[in-house]
Image 1: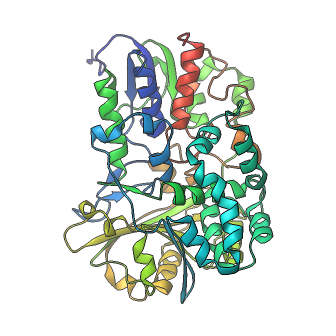
Image 2 (image 1 turned 60 degrees about the vertical axis):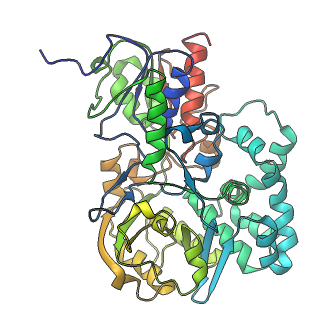
Image 3 (image 1 turned 45 degrees about the vertical axis):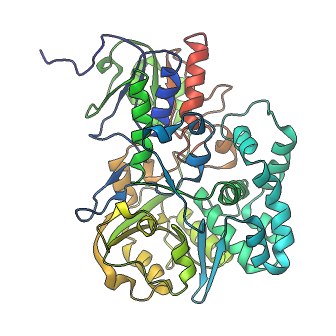
Length: 481
């Protein structure tokens, strides 16, 4: 008989999956004194917050996410004092640089006033749009990073909701006359992985744009793994237990517990739970929709990227490239099962600001574009052409590269169905109701089973709030808290 990998014979709660939401759920439960076990299929914890030597020894690449405005500002993470567990933030001078064309770069600066001033005739309109959300950013996050509920700040939420629920194209064209604010905000809106003429795409531009002014777009020193390591350190100090290299295929593999929380896709929850979930619930979950996938390239470089405009070297995040119309066209094509000849590319270059990420004198970066759901297409050439246009000579500086198609991303992390890193399409309905329309989206018909992944509100991003709210649901429904 093989020895059990678990220290206890039973637990208060078992969390399946160690992404930031799974770890957040585990910490929230452990802080109330509940015994918690986290099980992870990989040999390392972290989900979307892993850092590995993907190309060459000494080059530490973020496997998924790199830049974390919502992690720094997360209402739950901010209460945990994670700096005591080694987490520190590096803030580049400029949150976002957007390459408009071969000789124009638009930046979103930390200063709201400086950014507005750079937009000339659109400056006042930009300031009026963002000022209320920047000045009340903490309250705004408390209101929107969670399920629908009675708001503590109804006036602020209403003021945000009116423009946020619009399509980004409609919002931008109604507020701004010039290309610059339209373009830089289009790049931010494109993080929604939706066509920019869809309702509620304005919300991503407003939220992440306001974050740039309120808290910046920081990176974690040492890589995104520092976030998961800090959460894990806190969990262990609270008495929690983490077991890796343990793939869960059925509930029977897990020790007895009063509650089970799943930082997994809805389909994985159904597979593991089996007959514990009624057919009607399982059938309803099949209607949950996923968005486009991501194709990602990681580069080891012998020198920094040689940007034509040095403004690009002031930010860890560079958007490539073009006007609102060009960004919108590329995103629409990804939804139409096609890849734009010049795709919209999100690029990060963390080693410019964190010397721990690459050997002395060397650098690393990654870029990704959105591709059709589940695609195996290789977009390396298209992505590198976009970088080369803004940084002639870039390809000569590549020492090694590692690529992952949308299909390969799902194989690496089964939560990324079809390569969708947001855990499900952020359409108007699914922005509020994920994965189903339920009063408690984290609870399931089985009273001890809960979903805590980014397929629940508030959705994608490294903020831990899906896990926090799922833990609250478990505390209320199972533990009487």
